[in-house]
Image 1 (cartoon, helix red, strand yellow):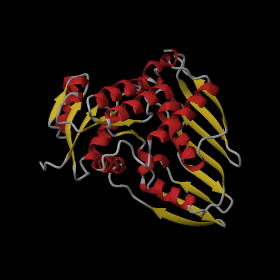
Image 2 (cartoon, helix red, strand yellow):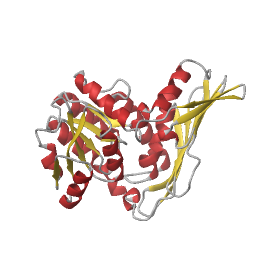
Image 3 (cartoon, one colour):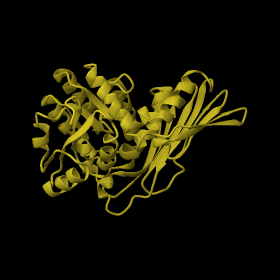
Image 4 (cartoon, helix red, strand yellow):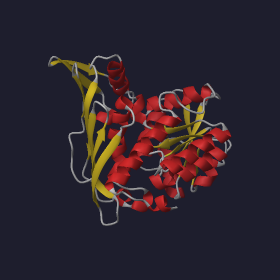
Length: 327
């Protein structure tokens, strides 16, 4: 094993961690050094599958492992803040799964910990680094669509049995924070923070939103966005401007292609990802660490704060409340 490899730890060993670990193996200067679960049996199985050097049955042991350079936190939303802050205070770099936290207050505390400890910290918004998305953003910023006037994006699927964490408010469950942040991200990256928002949700008995529809108003544009655990949606995104429109193909948040329509003439762009697509955010982490940066210019601390602020406004409009909001 080369000494210049960056040693990763993964905390929380669910489905997204498995996808991340597969892509981590595709990054040349990355090593999966340690994994941690509250179950040592699960950690050992995961570690064996993905060739981790160490497997821990508790989170503290991984956080305090001197060999770990950076920790990927893939636990339920409710623990993002506490685990990130603990890891940063242990002088580890951190890549934390989206959403960065439950609310703006938590997110601010996480970023303050990164700055205090001079360690790299980034919300794992992998779509930001997807080749299709970066190409779409480049075309929009180059003016190929003219002034943007309308964005439409959704993220909906029917939740399977056994995914109860997604409807547990104590774990930060609900469609908005789990999936709705993707459409919000798209609108934010293209149009910035809205002047005002309107939102409405349907709820599970426990209080988590099972479906949320959002309207974001800008001076000369609107974004109509949707997230759902109870309905399958088209999973494509449309950005319309004065000179044309772009349609990002399904599944748009991890897209491999998009179409540009100008005068109703379609030009197709195919940009397949390396692996699932987590490779690009991993490489961005490595670049920033090598340059002694505590944040990415592509997805900065301020970007994360802006996005969670928008999500907070949507929650207020829709009546989505989490226990931590009252602390």
